[in-house]
Image (cartoon, rainbow, N blue to C red; front, side):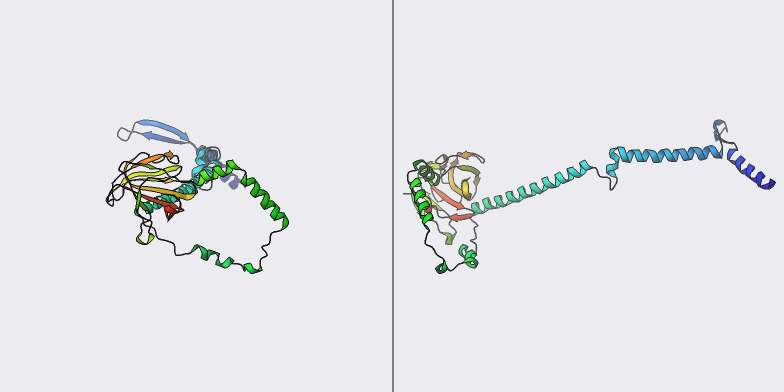
Length: 289
């Protein structure tokens, strides 16, 4: 028992033994700094330092923005910003895609690189054709009364009829003689109209100028986007009076007849009319007489 008590007393004394840590000058052995230490002091200081370091780390992670740099600790604001950026990126992608298609459409109109679709419109309705012989087409009494009432109202509604007439009327772009007509077989998707040089070229209806520039092949070109997917194109002009982005009214002068461009053979207007990305014969829409 006495030996065990002595060993215990010695082990306890080891923790309290004083040690001296001295910093000396290597050349002169002059004492610069000295510290009195014990094992117990070193243990206590080390433990407190470790606890303080752990506590500081927890505080930084829990209450500062540094936690956002640790995987799995992304903040709600960052997540919200990420979602917002994804939405903006998706919207920009759609806008870029639309602009690319629109630019490709303008390029196609400028160069006349139109390839008609191999699918006939009527063929899309083949799976839904019905046998009309089995359908009863005789109107009932109520239907006949309603039709008569609507016809009577439309007959005397002068304002509505005049508005519709003005809505569908298209102005003649220039007065002159048609020298070449619309011929898709030779890729001439336009009509050529001879006219006096510097004669006014008018917009067929109201719209927005989407292209107004010089091209080497067709000279000064102006394109106007109208409602319902209609696009009018005026080529070989001598001068352009409207810029891209301008709003024009029906019958407003947008250019002057000229003889510009490599493909031009004299003063005339090369006029094209496109409807929903398909060239159409302007004579079917405008009276040039």
